[in-house]
Amino acid sequence: MAQIIDGKAVSKQVREKVAAETAALKEKGITPGLAVIIVGDDPASQVYVRNKEKACDEVGFYSEKFALPASTTQQELNELVMKLNKRDKISGILCQLPLPSHLDDKEVINLIDPKKDVDAFHPVNVGEIMIGDYNFLPCTPAGIMELIHSTGVDICSKKAVVIGRSNIVGKPMAMLLLHENATVEITHSKTKDLKSITSQADILVAAIGKAKFVTADMVKDGAVVIDVGMNRDENGKLCGDVDFENVKEKCSYITPVPGGVGPMTISMLMKNTLTAAKIQNGLMK
Ligand code: GUN
Image 1 (cartoon, protein in one colour):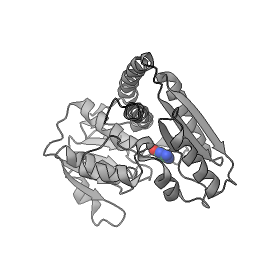
Image 2 (image 1 turned 90 degrees about the horizontal axis):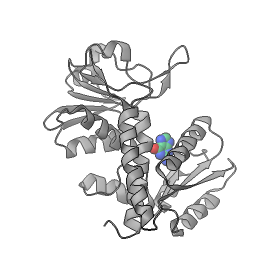
Image 3 (image 1 turned 60 degrees about the vertical axis):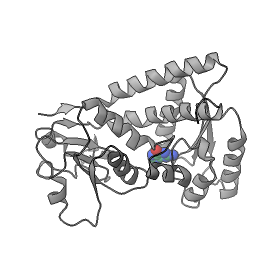
């Protein structure tokens, strides 16, 4: 049976480290600040944003929430981002996605100063990640790397398979695994004979968005299985993209849902905001 990777415990370690560094920065008169923009009233987004604010308090950051009505225009949103780009108190800007359908998320992302882009969604930051010379990593893949590292499993020369090719998770995830010398394959909804590929994976990252999609027959014995999913099962219970109960009997390490990847994402956002504050105050290049 697999060991369960405790996302809450790893996440706590990251936050404690960020909190300690923040306390040291405050001695120098620098307080990292995060601006979180949320447009409309999507309930899931409201929960995420509340958790981000709570995490800021926990690590000692200044934070400001901008809750805009669903009727906000592109120009109003753009103007807010441009104003926040100029504010010294704000080290990082995060615009919670998805935006209401009349707003263009690409336009907003492109306007965020890359030095304040703590999501690492701006094309400049995406390009730097591709090259392997970066300050910010997107929070979910960065958190997953911390979770894999916490197992002590060596990534070098392992076969890693990522299911899902989103800009937020799948693509950057593959790049980070590649940077650590895994042999990486990205699969997606058009991939043929997925099972023949996933069953070769020493490290399997599932980011599909379909409840219990990855079944035990798709998993190699002893694999490390990372579940990025956040779905509801037939009984309305929170579950991941992996059939946890059956897969855990076969793999060596597995992340639970909840309590796996989820808690890491916000911790990595805290880490990015701290990095942004350091860069803007000349303490890092
Ligand atoms: N919506 C879901 N995940 C994320 C994220 O990591 N960043 C932002 N900005 N919005 C999200």
